[in-house]
Length: 472
Ligand SMILES: Nc1ncnc2c1ncn2[C@@H]1O[C@H](COP(=O)(O)OP(=O)(O)OP(=O)(O)O)[C@@H](O)[C@H]1O
Image (cartoon, rainbow, N blue to C red; front, side, top):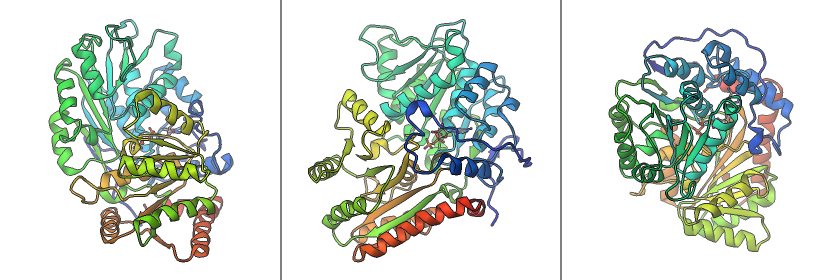
């Protein structure tokens, strides 16, 4: 089945697929990424090479990083990271981002396809190392994501650090009150960044690039939209505005046009949004309480590298943590109820593999990149304030697995008419058919799950993953 090609507004060039050298896993090892992967490294490499040779796959690319006009130090940085070939979004976005005079960009691509590297490379290409003043600002919705992006910029810019590059974080308590935030690249959350600018801790006069990661979320007027707008108003008028996300609902896209006027756009059709490596399933429970029993049962059945359980409410997350801990499970819980440093501690325990299960809320639904996560559980189906299905959050949550060509599974729990109807609406929206699992026959659940996991592995081993990717 052929798929509509992602739309590039501007000089939408089509790729002509030359076979490139097989690419290895571009693992972010410094973040504990590859350790504990439950798939042999060999399989991951073979699969990634296949995917990157398939023109219908989001990881496909006809170019090499050498063709993208990057600073030599950045090419070396990419090699250190084991990034052999750009992904589709990197190949398309970088020429548009790096053109002079700078132009705005709205960029969309599936979760886990390397948007971070695209916008970090733009910033690190544009930074003037002879000037110590802040020049590039990235805003992200959470401290965890801001820190992760700062980490990627630091490692990608390794060879620029010795030439004076500094990366700074504008998150609560990152600098003492009254002290100056120093770094040419600043990554922050919108509220703290706003405060720092107002208190003159962050000098914005030399700013030339503003990037919003998870831009649809950041521009949401019920959320952080107002703060982002206010930050932008304090920056030089000539700033290059770069917006990236896996999702841009039409309403936000309209507003994004105001925020990033005359932007080049790389967008996707809704049916292109799901990542094929993520197997979607749901478990039919009869009551809310049965969901908890099913959760515990499920962990008894499966050996999983790492997993994330998403709940709607903080108190549900805390309650599941309490009960699972009491039953001897080693779990971590992170919600917005925790203070910053506690959040860092919990998150690091999960990122480094000390805890294999993370129970959380939508606070971590976006952007977090931990390659060992092979299972995402929607304990509650994501819904909007009005109780309607939340399509975008579903996509971002399940996108915490299946990163850059890896395989993963997403299991959603339904327990009443509403949760069932919301899940069905979400699946209909993205045109996916989830596999149903039932709680009255756990032998059957185990059999199906093992078959799903085993089939995927066999497909990959036989090179059949290509066929599946072609159908995306
Ligand atoms: N060209 C590349 N080669 C190999 N690995 C890559 C490449 N680009 C990115 N990666 C890896 O892919 C993973 C996902 O990248 P990233 O976090 O940027 O995804 P994303 O598109 O921003 O996802 P999300 O929409 O969930 O935020 C990271 O672990 C990153 O190191």
